[in-house]
Amino acid sequence: MTVMPERPAPATDFTAENEIRTAARTLLRRPLLYDGGGHDDELRLVRRHRVELARLFADGLRYRLVVEPGVVRLYKVGLGRDHSRGLHRRSGTPFSPRGYALLTLTLAALTRCRSQLMVDELVAQIRSAAADAGIDLDLDAIADRRAMHGALLALCDLGVLSERDGDLEHWADQRTLSLLDVRRDRLALMVAAPLGNCQRADDVIRQMSVPSAAGGARVAVRRHLAEKPVLSLSDLTDEQREWWRRNRNREREWFRQRFGLELELRAEGAVAIDPLGELTDREFPGGGSARHFALLLLDAVINELRGIHGSTLHGTEWMTVPSAAVRRLAGDVFTTWREGLKKSHKADPEALLFEALEVLEAAGLVRQTDDAVLVHAAGSRYAPRPALVEAGAAGERSLFDEDTR
Image (cartoon, rainbow, N blue to C red; front, top):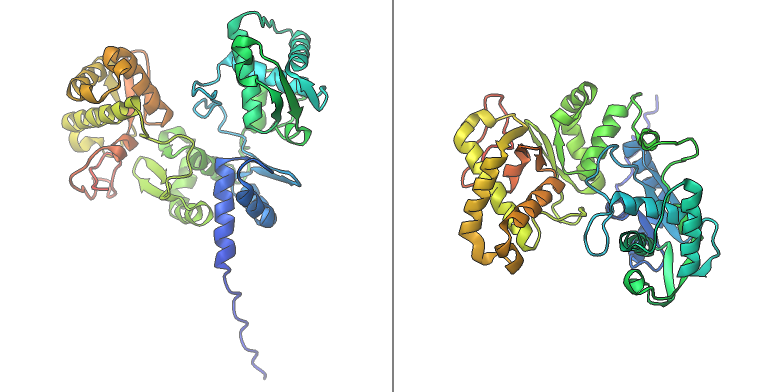
């Protein structure tokens, strides 16, 4: 009998693995890439590994990747009823509902516009689209004009519109002229789902939902960790919690290999950490007076919770703190650190508290109600910790445990 030698396993191409991981991280951070958009190197990587990337996103997250000659689009369909990752204007203020309506009308108008036109021609088409949709639009009112201006600038930032000549930046306040180019290849990739049968917002959200068929729990949990760093067991369905319990250690390796993310597994869920500090659209705490105050306030709240509840915090995802207690702690922090705040915040501590809570809510660390603030266990991940508490009664560390990292 002839014994055939074992065929050696194919060698791992570490260069290709690193390139695919880099490209995947880029697409999570910037789902739309196009020639001349300032990310040409990343665009080349995506094109080079388009097959592997399409499979990764389709199998792992059920996201669709479209690669065309001049543009790449990853359709990240979001997390359903979640408002924490909306569009922001160039000033940093979030889009209002009116702003989204005008953005949608602008996209509709662009589908029937010439490829090059003056901004006033586009405005006329937007008025027509608004009339067709039964939406009142008053561009003599500064609020509507600024909302439309925000939509135009957002589409410029996305590469759908580009200014060939003029002064679009000051159109809202000064009605300046501008000659615009429309990139139809990018425009065609804007809408993430077919909307022909949608009559209400609920219909659109339903189009984006993860089906409950086989693999639905896996995809839903992975999407959550890919889009938001804090995973709370209380936010999961029974099916999703059971899947997470059985597979969480395997998922830690999956996220590390595919995206370079480290999952910290804790009693309350998990936190996704990027060691490179790049894979985020919102840095926390980041720079600025309000963000620094938010971090100091979070530390004060967590310390008060530990003082009141001690080890009973272990395994509790959300703790309720009365609004009056938060205001008292904010006053203490303000008194201690007042000199380090910017002038406007020194003059208006109430506005500072509002901004700080908005920062914490956007980071997924607090939720505000009418008379209380809910604080997530992951909040203590950001607080100073002098010692490590190894394990609670359940045999594993809690996010509320003190940690030296």
